[in-house]
Image (tube, rainbow, N blue to C red; front, side, top):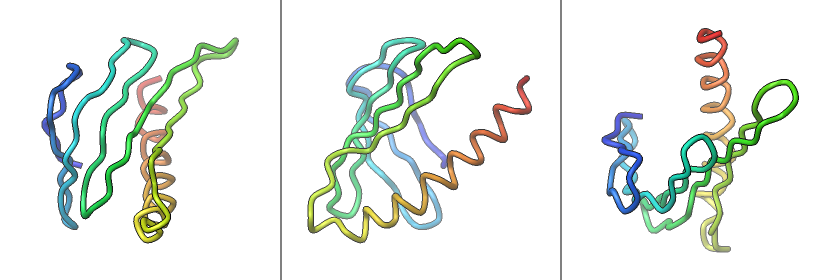
Length: 98
């Protein structure tokens, strides 16, 4: 997604796509460990956190989007569909770096 992200706490940025935009604000940055930011669009206000953990064979990446409410069923289903597609593409990009 097109964006104006900067890894600076409290930096406000947008993710943009053909379906609309997401307003975000960086909450935490721990280089090589954690990135956390808000994710707000269409009444949804959640937090996305990326965590890197060293392992014996490399690094484990964990992504969590938290804060969905019961009335966010459609957004939750959209996230269930969208994030796996994004992560597959991310894995393909990372494979080209090796």
